[in-house]
Image 1 (spheres, rainbow, N blue to C red):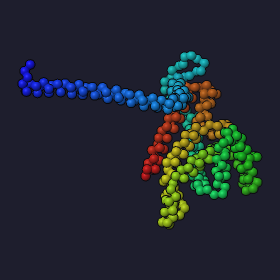
Image 2 (image 1 turned 90 degrees about the horizontal axis):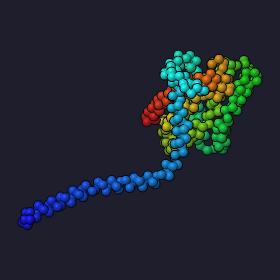
Image 3 (image 1 turned 90 degrees about the vertical axis):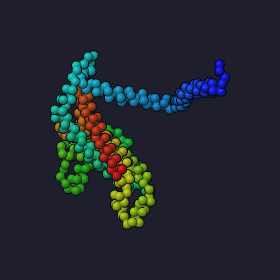
Image 4 (image 1 turned 60 degrees about the horizontal axis):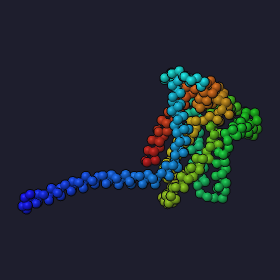
Length: 330
């Protein structure tokens, strides 16, 4: 080999280039091995957390996701529970539902009940929460008093409501007729009054929960804002309008959405108190669904009703989130 300085320089340069290339090629492999080791250690440290949520995920899948997909499947068939093979209908159940006058009637009843109940619940809960925000003598007693009806079962609620609204011997008519001198009113047999009667009964039963939620939300509003407003000459109503309402909007969003979802699924109150009558005046969508499935054994049609109701609730919930979130950001 020629040992001239030039040749030695070229040889050393080639040797250094080879070593550098080998090192550069090995670096990603070492980095990849390090990343895999780090990910494995992270996964191993997080394994107890995943094991804790595993039972919830299994129950969520079995009792929520599976029934949803199963209901969608059944809605496409003329489903007979005792048959091994079912007759395919496709969208026929949904087409029949769009032409079903009873469905539209019970949907109108449900929406009217929901609107009345949500508006009264939110308004009363917010007003009472504002009154009970600050501690005073007996404040805890009033909180328990307003929340107490919520611990009653719906069956007990139905019995109480029947005794209160009964036309002949009910408490309401007793005061209206014997004390105030008004004519006797058939609260539960008048088609125009039955939905407001059910709504008022439900508000008495349920408004304790949103009241406590609003109390918690009001405690998150700094008192310095009200003090500054007083210095600027704002009164109680002005402070409530310009401070309380804007800052309570995230809490109100939660309350409105949860109340909407709950009361769109009303079933037990009309079923126990009126049986859906008079006629269909108080029958709800869920009651109609229940009777279609378990009284007339039309499981495919009942599943179509449940799918349509779920879609309505999802769409309205998304709209409520969008509108109230914009209001809260504004």
